[in-house]
Image 1: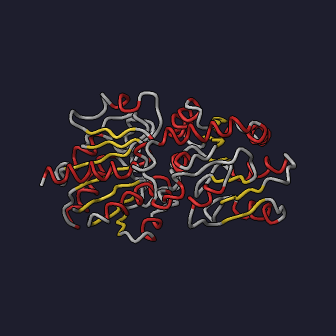
Image 2: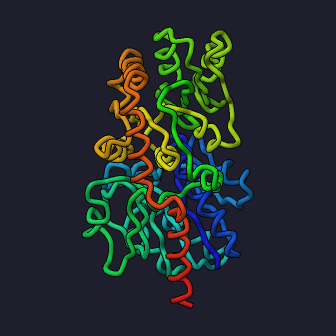
Image 3: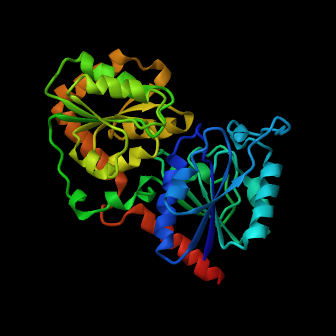
Length: 369
């Protein structure tokens, strides 16, 4: 089974799309699938993450000033070129490099018109989406976000017969989160260890803001693990602040995020892919939304009683973060309730969502064979 992942690897979107696709690719490779990635060479391209994971990555040319796309929806410009040009280049690459059985698309700029052209080179398409703002021509649609309407939000956006896998129970969790010791994890009712993590990039500067907020509480009994690597624009400033305050432990890179989350009593982070990793481990979280695509998921978590949502980053200052951390410390009962609600929305701890996704792919593949 030959599979091509067409993924947005731009700095703008962060590493979330790549990481969830790599997680799915790793699992499919265990089924003897041949995996390739296809990205476009945008400024701040992060496709090396896939290369470092052992995958062949082909690159479409960087956008030029001569590219004049006509954008049909709010994220269409993220493609960098017109959908027609991107589709043509993709088809040419597939024809040069060999046929594919599955095309897996994780890109907010790609929609039905692009996918329809891909039918000439593949019989099966899986679209990963969480915006529900455009139509798709796909056989499976995966949306791991929490939303009141779940699969109903796509009822008019996908063809008849498309299999909808919607909700956190289908989250693409990395294997490190699925070990047995985490399935029976019991949370402490007090906050002693805080986790501060806003993704690989954190372009809006929430990590530094949160560190300063914690220090303003002047509560030396709380230790914080602060994850901020070289891709963080404020990396040096964050490291300097952590080095001068013993209660802040700086990590440029973390090999086992699951272990880091497991030992934390409370997290402060963004509302992206990491949301479902935290929820799987029942980690109470204060969410700061750093991108439009995170709004619905963050709102859904808050409505389900599974997190505190402070809203969009532009309206969140150090004082409001400090107040939220202080509230979580002082309200131990609510802290435990948030943990239990997170576990509930994650689904069955013994049947991780990625297995449902892989099963759906394999069943469709064998049905076509």
